[in-house]
Length: 79
Image (tube, rainbow, N blue to C red; front, side, top):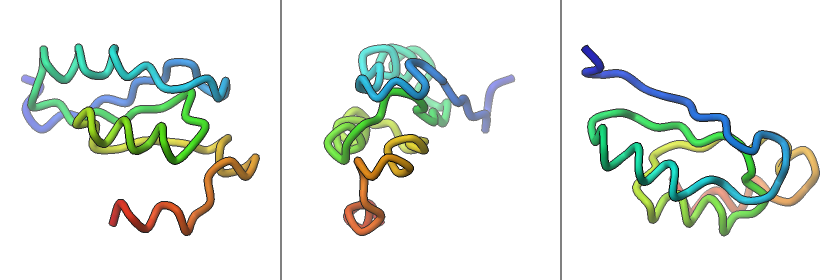
């Protein structure tokens, strides 16, 4: 059973070319109770906003922070 499960999808990891939002939406629509953690491709706060608008509850954005493309203060709007 997948009840209470979560999934971290690493697509485009470290490439800073934008997340695979359509892929995440497709998975969300097929398995609505799955907690999806998007990982890979995130290069801006706008990418995080798009993921949030798409109903993706969590995102990993390590390289974007490391390279200064996302500032920690910009994340306060998601708290």
